[in-house]
Length: 377
Image (cartoon, rainbow, N blue to C red; front, top):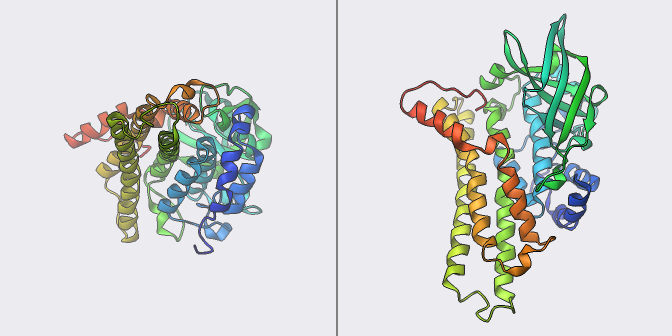
């Protein structure tokens, strides 16, 4: 690998070894964050002028899958933190300097749901207050990106420093325990200068001042993938566990390998995993080819890719269900690795980006000549 590539391999086994600690602490261990930084993963999408790597989306998401094969929560948190650099690269250069001027490994969490945010337009910026849930990895971050509506204008994202918000420990979940997806609270309005905000339509129109054409790719295409791709690695982990058990089981006289139903299950699971990864990489190949040629990604393709990203969790749930249903009696006990994966993937389905219903409706509407209704594509 080149010096500008992510060097994740030396740390992968550590993520697996600490996975139980993460579940018990309800946040990934700080050592994982430090190793994600050492590997270059956290600064994957940081512009080179700030000390980043500017790796391709294909390398970024392939690495996230490898991390998830060891621990899905670490892949989830690391991916979300790292992908925020892509959005920040689209914002005012002064905002980028605030975050990365002294540290290209600076960490940013997020909560884009605007429901709990309140805004007031003032001279030079916005006064922001409210409560936002599900900010994965926030305990490890010095900044947060928060979504809110400005009356009469629409949706913006606000970049807020750690000194201006509190973290409330609310993350008691059935799965993805170690993501530490707690609440962000701003009780009294804080001032956010205009240069630390990002208008939704600027993101939709792919506006940026970067030299690398990669940043002309619709940024939402990266974020919607960062909350579904970890399931691909986790499902592959489950398949590996299942195959190892089937090959060595002493509790079943057939040792499972001679069972036609088991053979069907492993093949169907492997095929679902392979399809999910292949479609993801193909879509980024297509987008990058267009962007490198100086062309825009067609709107219909953006809608298609948004829908396909949202189906990954359903497909990976199917893959893991195929395996879990035949995993044997030991899988029911707490601490079972395959059961942990089952919980993690099913909980990931609760993320709004992983619910394909609305995205299917929008794609079908456009296929039949209607107008696009989604501006986070």
